[in-house]
Image (cartoon, rainbow, N blue to C red):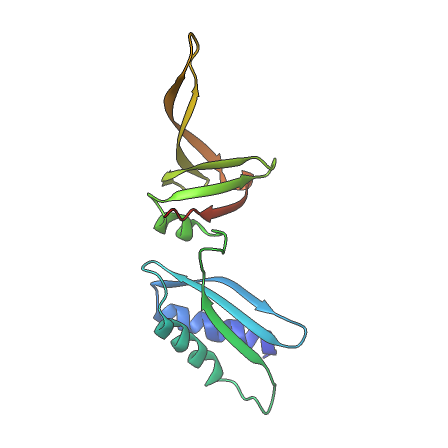
Length: 155
C-alpha cells in the first residue's frame, strides 16, 4: 500500500471508531509533512487530536518512511466546508462570501443537502419620510454559491 493510501486508511479506521468526529482536511506536503484537520459534533478536544495522532503514528514505521504529523481541530479561522459543519453551527452568526464576491452576514437558521438558510437583520431607509426601519428576512443560499463561510465571533 502506498504511503498516502496507508495514512488515509488509518485516519478512516480511526474515524469509524469515533463517529462523533469527522475529517475536514488531510494535506500532504512534498516533504511528507502531514496535516490532519478534524471537527466534531461536540467539538474536538486535545485528547481527540492525540488519539488520532497515535492511531496513525503507532501503525507507521518511521524507518520505512520518514514523515511529520500534525493533527488539529478546525478552528474559528477555518472555513466551514461540510454539511455536517454547517449543521453543528445552526443558530450561530456566519459571514458568507459568495461566488460573486458579495458578503452576507446572518444567523444560520436551517440547511438541507443543497443549501443553507440565513436570517438577515439590517436597517434600511424608510420608503416614505426620514429614518430607518429594522428588516428581518430569510435568505436561502445554495452551497454551490458559497465561496467561503466563517463563523462570526462577537464579543
